[in-house]
Length: 398
Ligand code: ATP
Image (cartoon, rainbow, N blue to C red; front, side, top):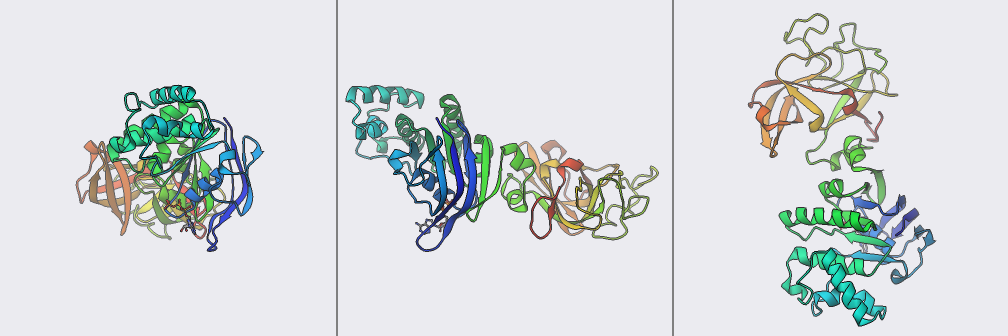
C-alpha cells in the first residue's frame, strides 16, 4: 500500500488542451479518494497520468515516495479499472482475473488459487468458468475489480466504476465497493462526475474545474462549506441557493440600519419589515436584527458570520435548502418572507420553492410539513449555515 504525491502536474495534449493544469495533491496511504467534476474538467486525464497512460508535461507523480513520472505503466504498481471494464470476451472469468499474473509468468496452480480467493472476495463464486458475455453488468464490474485486485498493485485507479450500472445495481455496487476498499485498505482513486457517489464513497474529494483543483476536503467539508460558488453549485442533490446580498451588520453587531435592526436601504430590506405580523417590541415584525452579523437578500435578511466583509459590501449569499427552516408563524431575528410557488416530492422530504420578492429560494421540509402553494411563509437559518462569497471571484469570504 502506498500514498500518491502529485506536484505541479500538467498534462497537455498535442492539440494544446491543458487537460490537467498545474495540480498539487496528496492521497494518503489507504485513502478512498474521489476526483469529481463536470464532463471535460480533466478527471480521466489526471487518472491516466497517474497510471502512466498519458505523459505528464510538467510536474511529478510519486507513488509510495518513488518518482514514477517517467515510469512505464506496468512499473508503477498501479491497477486500473476502466469505465467499460475492458474484459477479454474470449477468456473465462477466472482467466480474466488472473491475466496480469499470467503476463508475469506466475504458475498456473498459484493463479487458480488467486482466482478462487479473489472470486470469493468479490462474490463471484460459481461464475469463474463463465465468459464475460454470460454475466450481468454488476458481475462484469466485479470481475474487472477482481482483476485489478489480483494484480496486487499498491494503488487502485477506478475510472467511473459504477457508471455502466443501472440505478439499483449502482447503489448495491456502491456499498460493495466501499466495504471492499475498507476491508482491503488499498489506496484507491476513483473518478466520477456524480457528486452523490463521491459524497457517499470517498474519504476525501478533489473537485476539479478546467484542469484545476477548486476544493479538496472531506465530503462533509465540501458539502457544508464549499470553497467557492462553483463547488457550491456542483455539490448537493438540491442546488445551493446563491443570492445577491448586502452586508447590513457585521459580526460585531455594527449596524447600518438604525437601532431597530430593520433595513432602510439595500435590496429586500422592506420585505421583512412592515407587514405587521407579531407585536413583541423591538423587531416587532419578527424579522429584526438579533445583534449579530446579517446580510440583506431578496425578501428580507439572514444572520451570517460576516468575517472581514464590511457593512455595505455586496456579496453572493449561499445557503443550502437543507439548512433553511420554513415556518408560518412569527420568528425572532433576521428572516426572509415569501410565498410558496411549488413543492417537489424528494421522498421523505419536499423541496419547496418560495417566491421572495421575485427571487425563488429553495428550502427542504419533512414531507408532512409541506405547505400549500400560495401560503405565506418565513425562512430562517443559523448564522453558521449562511456563507458569503465574493461577488466577483466567487471565493468564500466567511
Ligand atoms: P468526462 O467526465 O467527460 O470523461 P473528464 O473530466 O474525464 O471528462 P477528460 O477526459 O480528462 O475530462 O478531458 C479533459 C479535456 O481534455 C477535455 O477538454 C477533452 O476534450 C480533452 N481531451 C481528452 N482526451 C484528449 C485527447 N486524447 N486529445 C486531445 N484532447 C483530449
